[in-house]
Length: 178
Image (cartoon, rainbow, N blue to C red; front, top):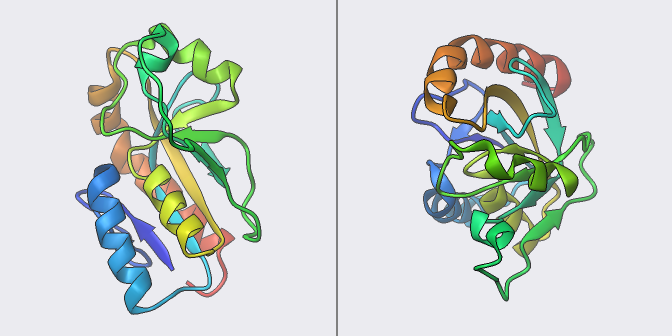
């Protein structure tokens, strides 16, 4: 099963699951319970903490859900906040962090990079958590549309159309049968 966020990031080969951690979890869980897939593949945009450039296509089987408060020393979580899936023939170039917020301040980008986290996408951790719960191999293919900095939103909007073309073409070459 191939999914995307929707709301501007649609593909003829992907089902939209919603934007952010909550919508993605609810809608993907519903899809998985109705028709359990052999694998889950997320396709969509991502922001770079600096390692990857705009237009890069990046594959990942690992997600984190880390908030800035961790780096500031004023937050903690009792939850497992990192997942890496096995069993899907998707590369693992970097971990992808998810939050319901888009990073627009580069102050902590280095903290993410030091820990092998190169990208940010709002939905990926939700997909990985649902996949883990139902023992489904999972991964993601992302196109970098922006850097995680003060221009994140305007860069995303400017680079999204071309990024989606690049991603669509890559996924159709990479994934057999679509």
